[in-house]
Length: 501
Ligand code: NAD
Image (cartoon, rainbow, N blue to C red):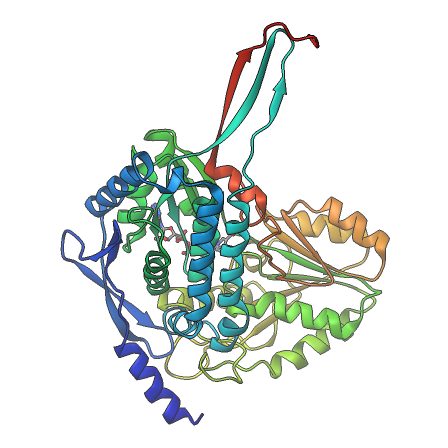
């Protein structure tokens, strides 16, 4: 499709955006204050839509709706298989609305449309199906107790949950949190990120069409320090599951501690290493380094912003990474040739550019990129630094942009030491054909997810969670994700006249 034709098509889609209001108790509604905020297209820096700005009072209404649905509604009381059936319908609708969701993600968050169509949106449908299948497999244990008693545990939904999500994968984060909470039988208030709120509202609409009862999913769009803070400190929310920065994670935990001691799960930032060993295939290693750090324009909590390369193949791998970076197309996320779209907003764009300046000032050698791309939109060239040392800001802090820091190492011990030299512990990658290296390094690196000869291979069935400043309090994905939305109750009863006592 020619550019002009495509732009007309996109204009039409923007004018057709339907859901911009809060979603409370199954209805789209204005915020109590009547205030709105603008959500901006990072390709053009122009406003896409005005979205209702929820605040504390709106969170109160949403919590009331969720509480009523939990205490008196059908959802927590349905047999698991019935919840699963409705969730599968929700997944069907996600698949049927693939293009609409992919368009919202590209417009609102600058995500590559073709990737959304092929990977992200089908992935969120799979996530919902995975937990639809889990809904009738939530069982406690039977307990043989020491005296004339027996017991069992019940796994009950924890109650009303607050789900605070970031902007880098707006749809995926929505289902990552909602799907296990729905399977567990919880009701919820979702606070999407203010930078990219549109797909959450669209998903709420699909959930309603699928038959998820009113009040089970509520979505309050708004800012973090108002609506988000109101979720974290709410006295009638039983659990908060937060994904975002470490800095805000601390605030969420403080708010939970000083309100009703709700349980807290934090999925936070990262500074993940990719370790490339001498025996690696050069092409594969360079591909993984590039994909690991530039996918989703580096706006991924697990991205490999530190690439450690063993000295024997260092020069060859670096040459190949730079060659490949030259072919990495930055541009309009709707263009099928594009590998990387714009950063999500001006703040993030300026933040990444300021890290690039730090890298230059601190003496890292810029091999490629290092500047904005074009005149309009938040585009940044893939940026590759070498001679990066552990003490540099770009080696220590999460950049959340398309910036790769290359470092050389000699021995396996040195790779492990460097990999662990971070206050984060979310993920790590290993490239090697030597099983002994793979085994040893994967057990020595303190991170919640290790990819060997692959990267960013997320799966609904594979749990992920952080070590150290990357978070705690439960995993996302996998059956483990259910745990934070469940409460264990023990029931004990005496047994009389048993021959086995
Ligand atoms: P952020 O912490 O600024 O915001 C995340 C969410 O928290 C948003 O919805 C925001 O409105 C809300 N928020 C902000 N202030 C708040 C407050 N005081 N109280 C309650 N809520 C508040 O993060 P971001 O910039 O949206 O996302 C980027 C960060 O998220 C990065 O650090 C990234 O590593 C992290 N992240 C982690 C994972 C993971 O699985 N570990 C996944 C994706 C992103």
